[in-house]
Length: 51
Figure (cartoon, rainbow, N blue to C red):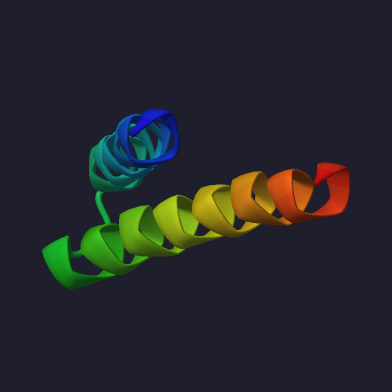
């Protein structure tokens, strides 16, 4: 639950920052989704390495 919450916060923040730089909506959504996927990958990778 913590991983999903953190990833959503990172993704939404990245999307809003991208949108504020006047890129298209589709590019902002893809930027946010990429940031969220990266955050989840790093989190789960760290958990797998620790376990």
